[in-house]
Image (cartoon, rainbow, N blue to C red; front, side, top):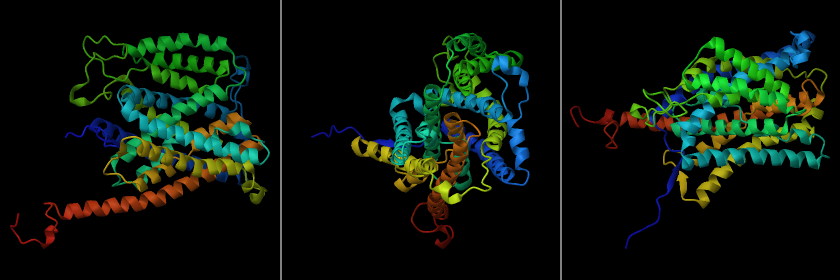
Length: 452
């Protein structure tokens, strides 16, 4: 009698070597970027609460181009950081999303199911918690429901890279893919729910520079004197349309081909129909080249400068008791710390419970809990949504900044506590395997000389 039961599918399995190499490269870059982001945030907090706080406010509110009102470009320095520099960050996110859909884990629907389900669970539950807390307190502040739904790629990967030396590689790949899917949904939320005064004509006109940008990159033309002006024109038109200008970065990132061009290539994405030799799919294309060029700019300049202008919460004269009792603050902190971890862990558990999927044999549920807690670090995009929801510089926006900082620090601390212990356990296993290299169960140091 034959058993026709389909085999159980492993969750969080080890990625291919090219995928592992890509994750390692991202981790190295984001470690430095996360450290700079933290420096920017700490500097903003210290500056905004120092005797020189007025100079911080004046710098944030300074309008470098007051004559740009006709083109909706009479923006303050803080707004330029949020709308302009952050577009570079979202361009890199767009490249990452394209790479995942074409050559990464998301190209396989079966492998994509887990991070997509986990990301949805990790966004839906924080939003529900936020709405429940705010409605219980009277309903003031509902517009900020999406603030705790976002995961910060730079911070989360930086924390993981600092903590992890022996954790399974599948956890790193899972966090990266989860954060990428999370960003895709966050971008959609920003475009749909936080777009005010929509003007369709500039958005339609923006299709022309986007199309020309796509035509050039699809043919491998990387002329900076053509691509950068086209990107700036696209950004300006999207900004004038009322859609948040960072969406322009994602749209441009999606146009870049991922797979390496072959001689005689005929596909629109620059692929001849065959995978590159050695299975290295997606690591020789223009997307990889541009991501390599622009990720340091994003992680090293754009995001830290945004943090410098976004995290300057003034606490002088603030009643901390009233701040911590504010319903919006409670809702954001609860959403980031509880909603993210329970949503991601719970949705993954349910997927394993009610389907034939199960965790990879190298990964335990406590490992996954640490990653789910780490996803509660929601700094960059959460602050951006807070600015869009309540208005930059408002009293409510200051409460949002404080709440995001508190929730992100708590999430990072809890995740570190779990992952440090798990990393130590994996390190002990690795040391035992190293001591007993021949696998006979007896430490090599106790074996007689010459014994096999």
